[in-house]
Amino acid sequence: MTAAELVPFVDSAPTIPAELTDVMAYVAESLAPSTRRAYRTGLADFAAWCDGQRLDSMPASPETVARYLAAGAKAGRSVSTLGQRLAAIRWAHESQGLESPTAAKGVRATMTGIRRELGVAPKRKAPATVDRLAGMVAHAKPDTMKGLRDRALLLFGFASAMRRSELVALDLADIEETERGLLVTVKRSKTDQEGKGQQRAIPFGRSPETCPVKALLSWVTAAGLTSGLVFRSVDRHGNVGSSMSTRAVADVVKAHAKRAGFDPAEFGGHSLRAGFVTSAAERGAAAERIMDHTGHRSVAMVRIYTRRADAFADHAGEGLL
Image 1: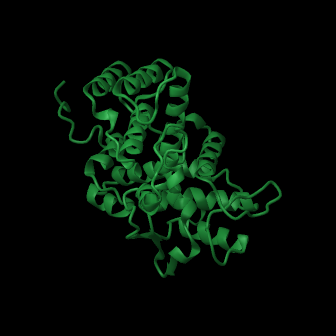
Image 2 (image 1 turned 45 degrees about the horizontal axis):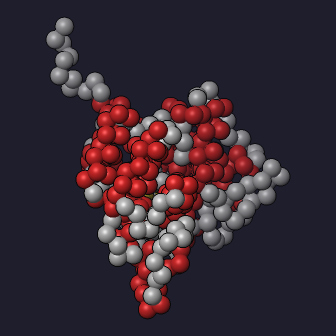
Image 3 (image 1 turned 90 degrees about the horizontal axis):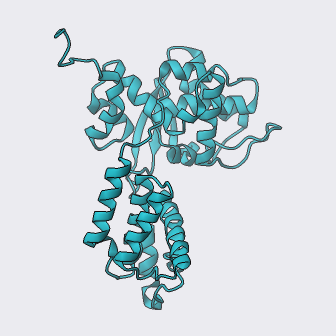
């Protein structure tokens, strides 16, 4: 994102001095690509709403931001969406050296009221646990390019516990074959924006039909890949493209969930990562070992997924009645 794109949807944004252009460009690079996209969308929506109300969006007053949040809540926006829009507005102001209106008491009170009225429980996608994954993979035909790609994506996506953004960014140079499986380097992730990298081991599966290593190598060989991105688009004629979007990852998961008899609306790209954590916990893996593989920094985050597995373990009410 260039300096001119920092607040691209705000006509009243202050002009950035030429000598600060490089500084502002680095400020933009401090955000993850997915965050930049979300902020761009949020700022566009905020600016459009302000234009319709004939209010200034940059700098915005606390009253304007509070009204925007209230209007969004009435329009059916979720708490998480409004929270993200609030973060975008704060970032846009602070990155320009302006006082953020989001810290005002009235804005914070408005957001608190919205949380209490709408609730903050996130709508999480169903985990593609081992049993569910097996049913999904069974519908990925190994005699077609798309089927090979989908099998590799589902099995490797589960075994690696990678995020969608990490899967579509995976390069062949990041994969090393060993006698025990694959060593994969995740160069950059949501919790590693500086690109320190993390290595993950992907062992061979117990069954050839569900082996993530075999599935990935079969796809790479059939697609004739020798360098570049691992996961790519495949058209209806079997032609392999140059890349794959995160949206396409979710579409693959949903399509195979539907074929396996599940409600596709309950599944998404994150179902593979969540499925690994849940399945590992169900088999008694310690949270710390799960975190070593997934890259989670907080046990609390892992617990979000493992509650399904441990709901009855050591239950305080067991045997009382």
